[in-house]
Image (tube, rainbow, N blue to C red; front, side, top):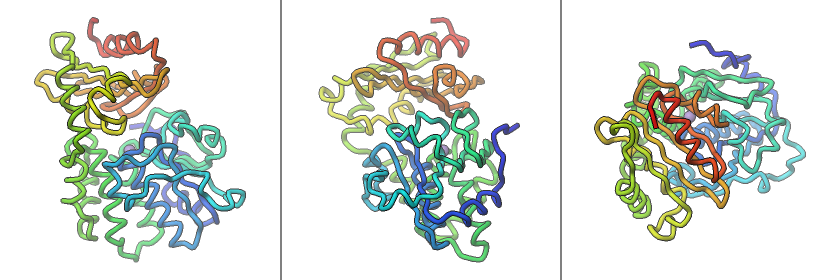
Length: 328
Ligand SMILES: [Mn+2]
């Protein structure tokens, strides 16, 4: 696959890290295991090189992923001591400026992007985008191996990298899983990655609230277009009624897409008074990243999303369904 955005290499990334002294590493909004694992391991690489490094996220770490952060919820810019000394702003797994959330004004300052999303509007002076990497942590693994070829990866680092791989491949089930993904995963298990615990936390353990919203979604899902499209909409009011927080909805899209015959799954969930977040999954030959990009979003061919204004949500969902080739 052609990759138009990359203008540097793994060794180019290493050079930038060597030159820096004090670094901020941005994760994307609604952080997932891949952006968290990537940013935390990049932080450890930098600290091992004697640098100051601060992972940052505009949103809190969701409860389901606190196992990755030793329970730490907040990674705010405001907590960084001596921000004036920062000489490198970088990002991991961030495709668009909007994904910086309340830190969007920092987009201009980011001079190193490490990512695996093809559709993007966040392009830095040094950008490394490998769309063939199943996860951003697969790239960060290569950075570690480049900088510390003879240092055995500590088990904590191995677990963080493994969590990114497992999450972004849906437990090594999605099409983006490659032989190399499995090779990296094998190395990480050799290095002590806690793979069974990670997969349990990512794919099995569910809070009661998450189970509640998934059951609610299952009861309210609409199967459109002869059952090929599964669609559910969650309003702000539903949170109090059903008993869940926004972060509990991360697996709803996967619950509704499992029904036999579903090719496209769409979840529209209200974020605040004015905004809906639309998440999509495609199990057929369409490129959801391109479609969502037309609505200002992005993602991967099989899993993408966008944010839209409240009044535009119904039209946006219809737009997506039509772009997938269905009549609605
Ligand atoms: Mn990712």
